[in-house]
Structures are given as C-alpha cells and as structure tokens.
Image 1 (cartoon, protein in one colour):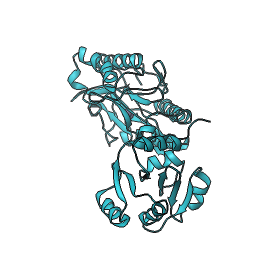
Image 2: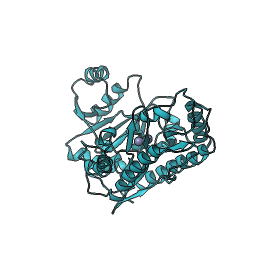
Image 3: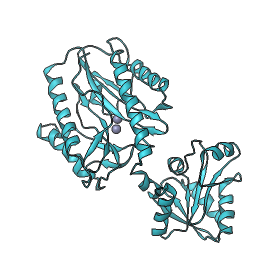
Image 4: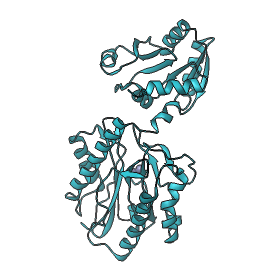
Length: 356
Ligand code: ZN
Ligand code: ZN
C-alpha cells in the first residue's frame, strides 16, 4: 500500500510546522475525501482527520468518505472546529488563503478566540499537481469522451446552423455519454470570430469556406478534459492552409519536445518559437498550456512566466494558436500526461486539416 493522499498531506503539514489545517476549497475537499456533495469541510491534525458536514450530507459522507471521522457540524461550522481543536489542545489553525473570503476570515477569527489563524497556499493543490494512476485513468476516460464528441460533431456541422446549435449538440452528446456537464463554457468560434481565442458560442450562423474552432471538454467523474480542433467548413483557402500548418507544426514540436525536468517556460517556448519564426509571434497572445484535473485550469502552466518544473504524472494541455483579426484563427489543443521520458497524448482526434 502506498501513501494515501492524507498521509502525503500530513508530511507537508509537518514540514511546514503546522499543527492543523482547515480545508474549505471544494476541489481539495473532494480530492482528500472522495466526497462528491456540495457542502463539507476537512480538518486535519497529526493524529486526527475529521470530515465536517451538515445533516443533509451525513449519510452520503458515511458512504463515500473513508479514513475520516464524520462530524455533523453546528450551523456555524467554525464553532465545531473550535471545539475539536480545544479538545486536541491545538492553538494554531492553518487555512487556505486562496479560498477564504475576508468577511468569513474576520468571523472565523472572532469565533476562534485564542486560536491563531495561519494563512497557507497550495498545500493540497501541490499534491494535486501530480496525478495518481486512478486520476489518470479517469482523465483518459474524459479525454476519450471529448474525442467521441468530435467524431459526432463532424457529422452535424453544416452551413446555416448557429454556433449555439453546435455547442448544444456537443454538450448534449457529452451528457448522454456520462458527463456531468461540459468542463467549461463551450467555445465555438466561426469565421472571423475564430480570431477570438475565447469566443464562446454565439448566435452567428455558420457559412461556407471558413474556420470553425471548437474548444470544449467533458466534466467526467469529477475530472476535466479540454480539447480544441479547428476545421474548415467548405473549402480551405491558401491562407487557411498556411495558418493551420504553422499551428500544427508548433503543436507537434511541443509534443515531441516536452519532458520532465523542463520548466513551464521552456515547454511554452517549444511551441512559441515555431510560431515566432513563421512571423506570427505577436498573434499568439496566450500561454501554450495549463494543467487539468478536478479543475479546468490548474498548475502547472506552460507559459512565459512559469518556472514550475514538469514532473511525471502531471497532466497538461498543449494548445498553441494564431489569431488574425478580421480573418480568423486556429488553435489545436491536446491533453497530455508527463511520463518518465516525455509525454503521452490522451486526446486522439485527428489533426489533419478537415474540410467539411
Ligand atoms: Zn481548451
Ligand atoms: Zn485549455
């Protein structure tokens, strides 16, 4: 038996000299406990692990949450936290500073009395950066569902329908095949709108002979996939082919070069250099990729400012693009698992330039 997530977190708490951690972030809660409900808190000390929830969820918690004592908390959860900490004679409570809003902090601070609140960041997120086998298996299923959705939508795309129609059809397909929802607002950007890197679907009607960029993913068993494919509806022009070829080369170069030990910045440069050499450096204004997992945007980032070192088990997107205002744009995105020697691509949809 390997170390559990809870064991690993306790090692980090000990290293940081922290006696107790109060986890309020819902993604961190799910990661540590497996609880899929929408209300609950985790309190961890060196010897104890409590899952605090209200009466609506105690039954579900009893079924899903292992290795934690389940406590039904008072209407003000912090009062129950104080009772547990007082009994354990703990005077310092670490909290997740990225999650607690200021008003709540003031309330906690007042109710905790002589217990001091200690701000922390990235304790659980740091563990989540490296996915275990179970997580990678689910991410592969989520990626597979995104691939199936692409195959499905190719038979649906035609001139005369709107971007909304396309998004709805994709989302319905994902839901019918096991997704809880899309992993983010589906981006369907056609024609000159494809020059918008984050053009969520609109009422625009699809025409012939133009790019359609589809950036979407499935939220499946709690995990996100994220894929982008750009196709031409009708006939591709020389310009369509030129832009597409450069983005594809940038993407393939990045996939071929990405490996553990490299920083996020170095990974980003693999794709960026290809686009810059082709003369479109100023038309690629976003990072090359980001981590995915329970959340759609996680660490590590593949970007100009990222000094995070890639490690086996990290799962990131690789998504270079070129955006030409007034003309359109191309983005190609895959999800990849960092391995001991390089990466493994888990989204498999074709990247040939398709004319539909
Ligand atoms: Zn995406
Ligand atoms: Zn993405």
